[in-house]
Every structure is written in C-alpha cells, then in structure tokens.
Length: 557
Image (tube, rainbow, N blue to C red; front, side):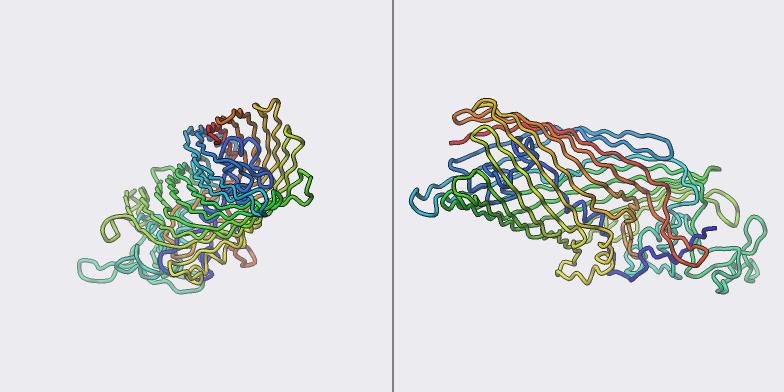
C-alpha cells in the first residue's frame, strides 16, 4: 500500500537561492538546435561540414566558407506544419499548427590573395538563421488514479509552519505551495491528534464568551493543525491539460576563413544568439460533486548569448577529392530573464461546514507592482565536437557524412555574477541528462551541370535518461509542473537545385519526427520499507512531427 509522503525527495536536497525557477528541461530546450539553413544545406541533411561551399556551414564547420572562390548573397523562406499526437489511457488527441518562416539571409565576400602564395583566399561571411523553433501545441486528459498535482503542492509546502506576510517573495517558499494553500488545495488540518508521531495542535476558535472551542468536521470529528505537514486533495481526479509553446532562437554568425594551397582550410565563427521562448499551460483536476480546480501558468525566457566556433578542412592527399573536417564549438554563454505569473481557480469543500467554496488566486495580486515575477540568470550550454567526411566523384556527385557530440549533463545554470554555486540544486539534477550523438548523411547528384538532386538523413540520440523527471527546488517559483522525456529524433530530407551563371535557386523538404513520454507532474511516495520513491500517472505517449518546405534564392558573382 503506497502512502503519500509530504517529506518527499522532490526538491528537498537543499534550499536553493531565492526564487529559483529553471530546470534541466529548460536547459535542454536552449541547448538543442534544428536542422535549418539554406535549402541546399537542408536538402543534404546538413552533412556539409567537410564539403563546405555553403553559407550555412559557418554554423557547423566555419572552415567550409574557405572553399568559396566568389562572392555569394542569398535568402531563404519556409513553411512548417507542426503535428502533435498524444495518447493517454486509450484516448487520442491531435494538435496541429502551421507557421511561415523567414529562415535565413547571408553573404560571403571572397578575397583572392594569389596563386603562388600559400594563402590563396581570405573570405568573410555573415549568416542569420532560425536555430530553433519552439512552436508546439499539446493536449491530454483522463483519470489520474492515485495521483494528484495537489500532492506535489503539499510536498513543496513541507516544513512550512508560518507563511509570513509576503510568501510570494519569501526566499524559502515556492509558488506551488502558496498557491495551493491560498486556493484551499492543500491543508495542514487533520482529524488525527498525531502526525508522524508528533502531537498536533487543536484547531480552535473563540466563542462569544471568549472560550477556546475546538473546530469539528462535518462528521463531528475534532480537527487539529499539523505544523509543517500538509495534505493534498482527493485522488481519482480527472485531469485536463493543454499547453502552447511559441518563439525560437535566432542565430547570427560572423565568419572569417582561410584557404592554404587549396588543401587546408581554416575558419573562425563568432556566433550571437537571441532567445524568445513563451509557454502557456492549463492544468485542471475534477473530482466530481462540484470539487475541482485549474492552474494556469504563463512563462517566458528571453535574452541573448554568444559562442565561438573553430573549424578545419583538410585534403590529406593532394590529388584526391577526399576531405576531412573537424570543428569545435565553445558553450553558448547566455544571459537570460525568466518571467512568470500564475492563477489558480478552485472550488473546494470547507472541512468545517461541508460547503463548496470558490477561490481565485492570482500571483500578480501578491507582488509589488501587481505584475509578473522577473528573475535574471545565466546559462551555459555544453561544448560541441564535430567530425565530418566529404568525397566528390568528378563534378556530378558529392557525398557527406558527419558525427557531432554534446554532453547535455555538462550544462550549467549560473547567477548573473557567473557563480554556478548559486544554482547548486539545479546543477545537481543534470545527471538525469546524457550525451547526445548526432549522425548526418547527405548526397548531391547533378543530373546536368545546372540541375541537382539531393537527399539526406539525420539521427540524434535521446538527451534524457528514462527515469528523468522535473525536480523542482522546494522554493521554486515555477508552476508548470509538466515535462516530457524525448526519445531519439530522425530528420529525412529531399531537395532540388538550379545553378545558372550567376543566379541559383534551391528547394528542400524536411520531415522530422520524434516520440516522447509526457507527464503532467510527479509525486513522491513512501513505500512499505520507508523509502521515498518517485511516481507519476501513466505516461502520455506523444509523437511529434514537423514537415517543412524551404526555398532559397541567391547570386554568386
């Protein structure tokens, strides 16, 4: 028989600094990138790190710009259809979204040094592209069984005996706990005179004569207050969840590259990033008999970052078309703001009168200025390591292959002074992440010199361990408790291209798909041996897809 434990392991390892909000799921969103860029680059699956000669390569292997022998200017547009299919307890839901994109714009200025000197060309380039799209809709609903989000609220409130005058800005209080308490979803009131072997305090009031009288519940049982011990509402609630995610990461790359003897190419790219991520969630539980609640959460992460990328392409054999590419990217160093607000609307039973009482609690009504909570933080993504191979057969066929690795568990949250110790709790949870390997394969075949056909494939391993979960610090202000453990991702691409004497145009199609296990929250339980275990409702099986069409036009001169 499982028993709800308010002294769970969730967020209880240590008290984090005031108002912490970030989790590994936020970090993973900021770390991953989409396959995006020019239509030629996408059509070949992005496997151009050793082949070079495309503006988008300055974001993967900066040395790829060193192969240019003429100037280039281009721009790309796209249209994406996002699909989300979720299944929970036999119920299936579909959420689709269509978005137009301005994908990238860039140029390369090629400067010839000479034919006799070792240094043949020095090239400069710039490229903007959409590095990541957050667009997604998600929905699930169904019976929760023995689980409830209110038990998580109760665990967040564990140990709190007094809420104080300003709990929404208190260093030791999380928003889930205070919202749950203010909305009547968690209570420190019990019919037992002992809780965990500790004597409870009688729940009393003064009558007209000033005498202390103990409250009783609707069944006539004396009521007690259990200091620091809270309980959630009923189990077997019916859950209703939906979310909307919007925004993206814009990447601006500035490149310089060198051609030595047409055999060694070196490149350096300075990258600048702009993040704008928005998430809205609605989560509710209905217990019947007019008892229910819903929690709405509005969250935004916005800011900027930078990195440095180094790359090389080498032709090991002078007269061979075989090339080897190597690249390394520093972490992206982000300076970000987390902005949040939440609202709980509930109808719960008064334990004394048995009547249903309604509550409407808004976080912004309890903050100075009556606005959102805004917290600044820094974030550092993992290092990126890339090795690539390229081979051409005459002027008709080009083959590319790449392997890229990032250790997601090495990501770091920091305060605005650059101290990771301030986020000791959040950084302690990155062990639930693992290294991500990405393989890219691509080919281009020129049917005639002016017309080319392209195809590509990408495969990326999962970033999360199977048992990963959203572990909120006990004083976290984050109120969206949902999370999804994504599995491996596949990208399939096709493309065609036309090359004139100056003008060129390319068209590409990309189909991306990955599965994930979605959970609206987790609960902590104490088993028969007294051990704390993590439990959750049955996983919602989710399939995410994205169909994208890209069109690029440009000129080389």
